[in-house]
Length: 272
Image (cartoon, rainbow, N blue to C red):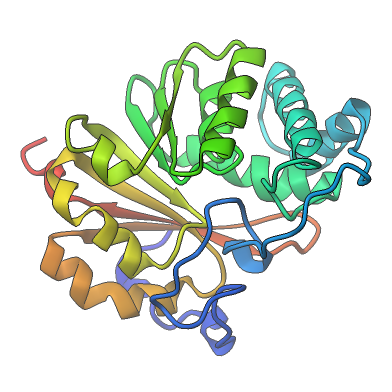
């Protein structure tokens, strides 16, 4: 963990490429997962001819990705089952461009699970903005059953899938909402609003500008370009009342990239 004041001479800044499939800080990104460096996936054509990995393959991949982590076997069992559902549905509906079992385990499930090791989710409300195939909402809800998680996406086919997965996994602490997070938060409040692989830092704070009093902390999962995004968003975040509070860097196994969790304190945190 590092202080935000230490962030801006980061070694990853030498790589000036922007997010995959985007151009510049204001690029609008999809919400369906994560590509190289933990940003966005490129859209892919899903097809029924692409065989999905078996449950055993996916469970073995979870063991590989979570090697050395303190995680219950039942959690990895549930992750493997969700991954099986995800990759089967992906043959009909585009949910993810990541198909290799080990990449799925590390880039979707380990990356999401690590939020639970950093943030106190027990008893708190979480809104997953742009959940796509259910990330990080489903892994968070499985790992922390006492968190109350809302998975939001504006694409109906994606929320339909997430709802089926939630029902299949019997997750009682997940609400699936079809629509826009900024509309949902007009009447609801959240301790944490989480953006994973959803646009730039600047666009994310803009998304919440009208509902900033409804959120205490804004969490963004980013890849190697994070410090450039933070700098580009600094003025806008300050204007809207969002303050960068904490930066937590971590690595994925198998040289799959350096990732970071950014936590911005939102105006709704005042007086807590």
